[in-house]
Image 1: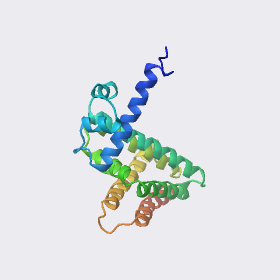
Image 2: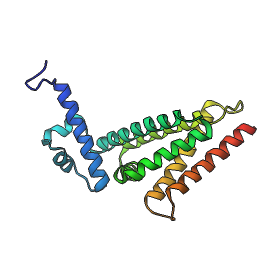
Image 3: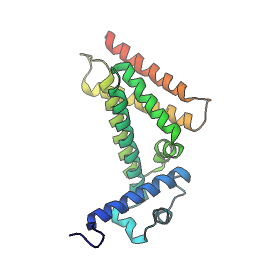
Image 4: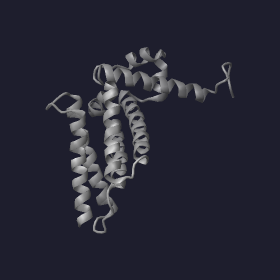
Length: 202
């Protein structure tokens, strides 16, 4: 049943959830997770207190939802970039180039994805692991076929590459070691190409 504004209760609840995620992304990116309260999220979203519990159990659940949105957008962007290449090393470079350019354009989003997510609770930790595995699958799909390695082994190699890349990205975003965006891309590609060459020769 639709009410006076032509929307169902579920549609209105979905819109409120989106507003909370939008507000969480802004505040986590500006202030950090530890300095953000549920009340501040509600104020930024322009919603009453009772509406937070409608969508989220706690701030950890909100952070997980914010991270999930960021990962979904990254996965979509990476797939699009890879599709324009011949795959393999070219695809991997397109992937890391796409990620770094996106983070460079959006420092608040970069802060949430690389630093603030580490401050979250169990819900966020599980969502981060899922996100890393999604990215790892993209990397694994770009690696060459190897009859001596199982699919799990190849996925783990992809996960190792993604985890190492995440640390490099955090170091870059934090302004440490004089790391530049281009250097991050080159270092990640050095790892990817070394793994791919070893897989091709074994």
